[in-house]
Length: 390
Image 1 (cartoon, rainbow, N blue to C red):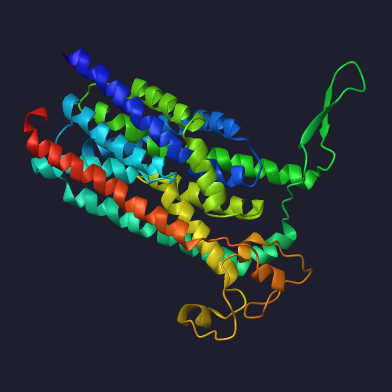
Image 2 (cartoon, rainbow, N blue to C red):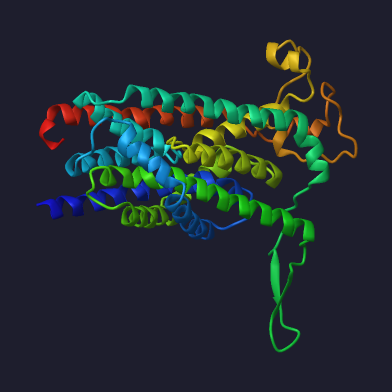
C-alpha cells in the first residue's frame, strides 16, 4: 500500500516539476529568447543542467524550510501527495494562461492550507516568508529604477551590446579541418555581450533550481517517504521536461508580451533577479524569480522613462509638460553626451515602442494572487473534509 502511494507521489511530483519547468524556464530565459539570442530548445537544455546544480546545492536550504518550517508536524506521505497535487494545479492554471507564476508562493500556500486545517501552521515562519515576498518586488523595482534613471544611459554608451543579423559563429573550411570564425556581421563586442547574457541566463537557471526544485520535492521528503537526493533528481528531470514543452508559451510571454528590450536591459534584469533569488534561497526563503524579474523590468522602464524630469517631479507628478512614456528603455541612446537628469532626451528615445504594458503586468499580478490562493483554499478544504489522510 505504501509503495503504491509513494509511486503516486512520485508521479504527482513529476506533474508539479513539469509545470514548474513551464513557468521558471520562461522567466529565466524569456529575455534572451525575446532578444533573439538563443533558441527555445537550447534554453531548455541549459536550464535543466543548471536547475539540477541549484537544487542540489542551495536548494537544500529551501527544502528544509518547506519540510520543517511552515507547519509544526511532518507531512505524511498521503498528505504530501495531496499537497503536491494542489501545488501543481495552481501552477497549471497559470501556465494555461501563459503567465509565469511564483511557484514558491503556490507551494507555501498549499502547505499552509494543510497547517490551517490541522492547526499546525507556524505563523512566525509564515510572517517571515511573507515579509520577504512583499519586500522582494519592491527592492527589485528600486534597483531597476535607480539603474534606469541614473546609470543606464551612460552605461549604454560604454557597454553597447550588439545583436547583428546572421549567426554569431560560422565554420570555415579553407583547409582539411573546419575552423570556427566570427559570423559575417559579428564583432568581438557582440561575442562578449552574448557571452555575458548566456552566463547570466545560466545564473538565473541556477537560482530557479535553488528555489523551485524544493517545491516539487519537499512534500515527499518531509515525512521521509523519499530521500532528498533522488527527490532532487526526479524534480529536475520533470522541470526539464516542462522546459522543453509548455515553457515555450511562457518564454514568449516574458520575452515578447511584457517587453521588447535590448540586451543590455536583459543583462541588468537577469543579474538583479538571479542575485536576489539566490541570496534569499541561501537563507532558506522560498522565493521565485518571477517576483524580482518583473519588479526589475517595471523599475528599469520607469527609471528610464523619468530621466527627462527631476526626482521630485517623478514622485509628485508635477511635470506638466513632459510626457512619461514607459517605452523609453526599448530605444538605445545614440548620443555622444548623455543629457543630465531633468533634461529632455532625444525624441526617438521617448517615443519608442512600449516596454511596460500595464494590461500584461495586471495579468501577471492577478495570477500571482489566484494561483497561491487556489492552492491554499483547496488544500485547506480537502484536509478539513478528509482529516484521515494527515
